[in-house]
Image (cartoon, rainbow over all chains, first blue to last red; front, side, top):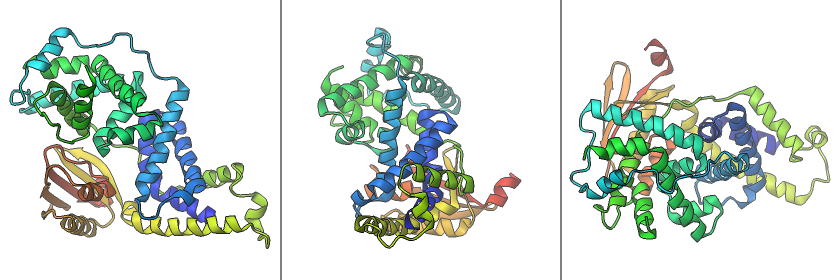
Length: 187
Length: 195
């Protein structure tokens, strides 16, 4: 039967890559697996809307990402931002003061390792507290998303998306404050 | 933190050059981008074909009403036209899916070490040649080497990375290198187990 064959093919071809992305957002095996299967069902239901000249993987991935953000919203995992800006004014000033040429580069291995370790730790906290914001930031970096693409992903207006982007930045500054301090502090 | 600031921050975070690269928001986003990119490649769970999982998916499709258990087992002469049309569309999707995904079924990105992306594939030489061919098709000259049973690829990528090049990298799950230097090593599963 066509649908059964197609679903099996979808599973064999796309499960690993989608599961990895799903797990990164949901951080729980069963939920991640459930979301991927939910995505395959949606792919089938919407296959008539797929435009043959576009890439299949990005299309499927966008369905997964919509579902992922929906689940995060419903799960209510987002933590309210208590402070409008988590960076100390001193660090804020340092970022503004450092010229492009003088951006502290992790030139030596020890410095790079220290920065990466600190970033990983802080980013983990950020993902725990603000999973949607952390995920969207990762997708922006990985896929070079534009403002319009972020708006489409969020299903929000341009204005609401601008606010979301602003929140991403503010929240990142709160949860990555230690990393900001380390990265810019020695400048 | 005004709207322009955030716009510059977003553009830089996405890898597009801001009009003012020396703007504090651009510098901040650039460092963030580099750090996020470095932590992107992870050893996620890599599960390929799984009969139990597929069976779950089929059961779920039945529960969702996409497949009627009765219809699943018998052939109806009165199948609605729209269902036949949908099946035809799906068949087309399935065929394109099969061709598009062929390489993914035999390659797995295992992570990176010192900036080198490690891929495990059943036929490292064939995959290396395929990647090099695809890179050349989008205007990137790549060099190859063999070392300790691994097939390697080095290439200097043009900056910014073009959309076609990004597609090639995405297809093989290779993250865009932040320094513009692509380093890939491909090992066979047997070699990986020995290491």
